[in-house]
Length: 417
Image (cartoon, rainbow, N blue to C red; front, side, top):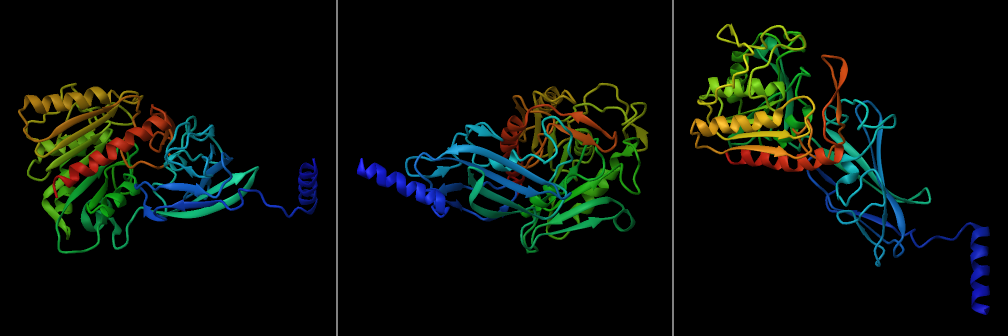
C-alpha cells in the first residue's frame, strides 16, 4: 500500500507541475533515404515508443497551388516500442493495409475527397522538388517529425520548353546529365486532356537515363483547339527531332501513348517503323476513334487523308520493337482491356517475334500510366470538356497497379539500352 500511495502522489504531483514526460517522448523517425526520386520507395520506422503504444503516423505536403495535402493512420508499436511502416497494420486512417508508402499515395487535400471530387494531379506539374513532412503524434501532440525530399529531376538532368517557332513541334524535353553514352529516348503522347503530358513522367524518365519529349498536339498555343485532323506526320517529325538530340540513340526511339494518344502512338509505330523502335500504350484503343470533343469528324490524317473511324483495328504488321499494352478491368472511359488484348493478338497474327504483352490489371481504372507513390484521385477534371470524368478503380487498387506498370515501363526501356 505504501508503494501504491507513493506512486499515486508522484503522479498527481507530475500532473500539477505539468513537467512530466510520457514514455513516448523519446520517439524518433528513421528513414533509409531522406532524398530520393519521387518514384522510389523509402523505408520508414519509428523507435523510442512505449511498448504496444497506439500512435498516429502521418505525412503532409504542399502542392503547386499551395494546398496542404495530409495523410494519417493509427498504428500500434511492437513489444520493443518500434513501428515498421512496411509491416504495421493500420487500425484506422488514410489507408487500410500495411504499406510502407501508404502515407504518400493516400494524402488528401484540405477541401475534399479524391475518390469523389475531381483534382488535377496535385504534384505532377509543379515544382521539381517536393517536400514531405512525416510526423508521429499521440493525443493530438506531435512527438517526432522529419522532412523528406522527393525529386522529379535528378541532379544534372535538365528540362526545357520546345516551341513551334524554333522546332516546329511543341512540348517539353527533359534530358539526363550530359555524357558520352547514347540512350533510348521516349516520345510521350497524352490523351483527350490535350496540352502536355504530365511533367513528372517526363522528368522522371530523364532521371532514369531516358531522354524524353512530352509532345503537345492539340489544345495548346499555336496548335488545333480540338483533337481533329491531327497529321500522323506531326508525330513522325517529333520522333525525328528527338533522334537528333545529343545523347539520344536514334536507333532506339520509343513512343508512349495514353488513352487517345495511344491511337497516335500506334499509328506512328505502324507507319514509321524506321523511326519508332518500341511502343508503350496505357489504356489503349485498338481502333481509330472520331474527333474530340465533338465526334463528327476525323481525329487523325495520314498523307493528307482523314483516317475514318470505321471500327477496323489499326494495322500493326509493320510495328517494330517491343510493345507493352496496359489496361484496367474497371476502366470507366473506354474498353481498354479488350483493346490491349486485341493489339497483342494482332501482333501474334502478324507473326511479330519481338516481345509484346497485354498487361490487364484487375480492378484498376483508366489512370494506369505513370509512377507510383503519388496522391491521385479516381475522377479527372478534363480541361477540354471543363467537367469531371469518372476514371474507375479505387485509389488503393490503382496504386497497386502502378507498382506493376512502372517497373514494366522501365524494364522495356532498359531492354533497349
